[in-house]
Image 1 (tube, rainbow, N blue to C red):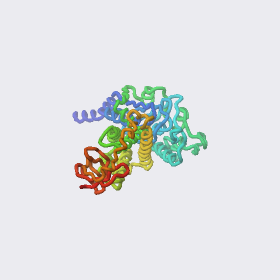
Image 2 (cartoon, helix red, strand yellow; image 1 turned 180 degrees about the vertical axis):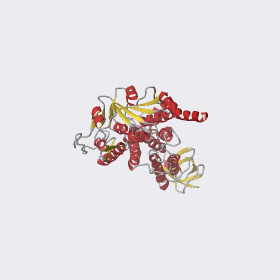
Image 3 (cartoon, rainbow, N blue to C red; image 1 turned 30 degrees about the horizontal axis):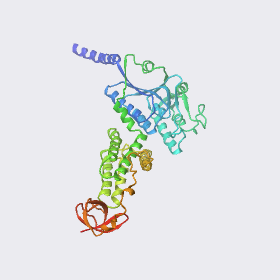
Image 4 (spheres, one colour; image 1 turned 120 degrees about the vertical axis):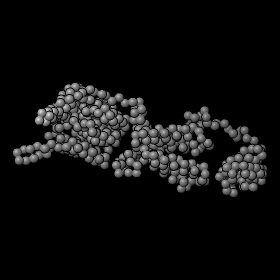
Length: 460
């Protein structure tokens, strides 16, 4: 009986001791600072920060925000990561959470703001600040509305009635995007909504006003004994984010295409090949490490290069092989920019695919324009005037020597003729065109005529 009573007593007291131990345990708050434009670098900061917070078994993640917005696709990835984070993520808006920053804030479990801070103005705009067509606004309205709805509703009992009230009214979130949305007593038609800290508290888009992260943690999260660990990005993460900038990706595509083009214009492997290979490595490496580029997408790009090389150096003319090579290069560059999983493209939206395709197409177009510009600069007055051929060769050629006298002479192919190439006649090197199919290097040839400064030959 004594042992029975002791067991019952331990069973009653054990939860009390466990609860007291948990209360006395030091809380870990992992802080991630996003005080910059929302782009792929910011997305990497959040992604890596959440991973490190999880490894440390943090009790909470505090997102310290001060941003005027940025790229929509990066903001979408960030808000998804926040919504599905197993660790609660809280936002502390230190002055600004505009545009993409508003979307990210609304995804957090709680929002706290400094006095004088603002949240809203989430209309999708272009680089000049002009609003994009309604197709883009429609997607953003749906995105920010569903983010607000994800915070759930409160159940309010009023007498015999049950009322469900959104914790964050989706209509208010939508008004931050569309100036046609009317919220009574808050915003009229024709105005995009931006909330001050006090207004955000009143309308449920701020859970408290604080002047520091310490005040957020102690006053609102209720942690007395806590430790703040701040995420510090490494140089590698900064470099990877920089290389994934859409503008730089377009430049790398331009260098890849330009390197391939100029390599096609010169024999052997030289500087253009080095530029194209280096640009391809810088383009694919961060995408592969970040999980965007799959093995098979990179192989498609390499296969395109191989097909293009076969078309240039093996098969005469330009036909199916060359077209297939160009399509493979285009497909490899484009598919590496979309976040598909193996051959599953269901998570990829039409907007994401269009953005990836436009990045590649614009990069290729810029590459061709760059090649035309660079070609025009090669010459006596161009940037490459020191390496351009400027000599007047006509002065060094003896007009008395009649090349037509070589017709009927025999020699050998100095290079493979398919059908053009180089030939040796009496120890001198000339341009030759085969009229009897491909002629391998070293085969005997006979000159049958001389036209347009070229010898036309046949196999002996």
